[in-house]
Image (tube, rainbow, N blue to C red; front, side):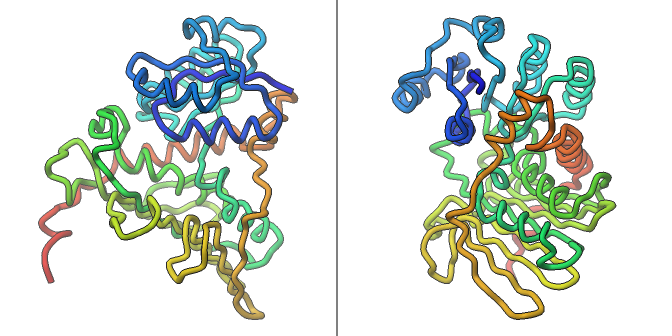
Amino acid sequence: MINFSVIGIMHGHIYGQIKCLVDAGATFHSWIARPSEHMLEAEFTKAFPNAAHAASEDEILNDNRVQLVVTSTIPVDRAPLGISVMLHGKDFMSDKPGFTTLEQLNTVREVQKRTQRIYSICFSERFENRATVRAGELVRAGAIGRVLQTVGLGPHRVNPPTRQPYFFDISQYGGILCDIASHQFDQFLYFTGSTEAHIVASQAGNVGHPEYPGLQDFGDVVLRGNGGSGYVRVDWFTPAGLPTWGDGRLTILGTQGYIELRKYLDIAGRPGGNHLFLVDTSGTQHIQCEDTHLPYGSQLIYDVLHRTETAMTQQHAFLASELALTAQLQAQPVNPSIVLQPL
């Protein structure tokens, strides 16, 4: 089994990243918060009292007992940290997005190729969502025939008082398509089986929060791969009336049916999350996926130990990120007066 350490705890996703590894048998060895994250230390210590609080990042990087370093630090700082981790002979797991610029991605690609270390990105909307894992099992079993298209929707609630300053600075988080939509690009590649893809069109902008000029609150993308087509829409407009932070959805269209995922709630009233709806040649069915096993943690541990790619290929992680970054770079500005024009 392996030991892992944490450097950087800015985003709450770090709790899920740690859980998936600990549940799979890894040991949470040590951690350190970065200077901008000290206000989060007390809560983190309470959640993980048995992990050692390291005196410095160098202590972790030079600790031969640690095989994997995990982070959810500010997005712009993740790639430089990952480079340092790999150069110290350790594997790396980043929260999404793993990069904020194509320049970062290109540098990481070169260092990863040279060091042969793992640069994994925890796309939690797939790896930590049981309905999405179950959908993958059904698609691989041929339940809907050949996949033609994915439609991924990622609405989120903005809740400004809970956000750290980086959230409102596009140079720190990379833009809405780089950040939130990285999930949807990962799922597009996974479900269509595409190994090559390009952006057909993209747009992004701030259409409803002029008081936060550095925030992009809406974006969408049309893309095409060698295994299918895709559409992505992400936003920060989840209303207060929804009982969860966002109504994440994914529709997978096949030649013999389709699957729709309501990942976090069923607005028709069924309790809980992880709802999967399957429509095929024999009828329709609702599948509750709460008992589906989440394999990412155990697969990544296996890959660290055996130098394999069972959790996610390195090519997949880099291509999903490249699509997100390219869509962000090419995005046409959204005109608020057009989007918000009353009927």
